[in-house]
Image (tube, rainbow, N blue to C red):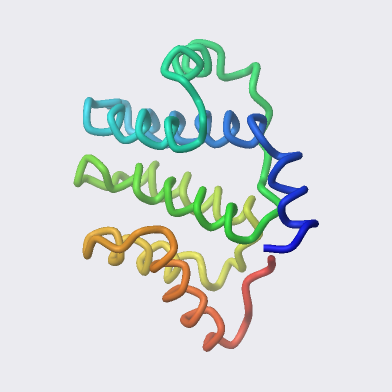
Length: 153
């Protein structure tokens, strides 16, 4: 990782992490059922992103106070999208509203519309097979590189 990438991650910091938590909460709640499996996943992702449980509770209570931010770093953008797909499938039941919201996030993150369903399906399959963010990103990069239209970065 070069210095501009490191600087970019530093600048994004907690704001992007809080935005990510808000997005995950929206994904977990969109089907009307925010269950324990989803909340446990949310806490684990929050911890990985340096967000305490009390901060997480505050974000959940006051989501309008958090502005949506798309990471500028390709790797962080993919990791956040992977987490959103993981939240969508956490309860083993994917509802239409979750699928639509996930597709909307993909568009907001700059992924090419023709590849969104394939991207989501590939991430879901990798999650099911136990692959982490990095392994999944490698596989998806290959898939998208071979596709006729590429993903915007």
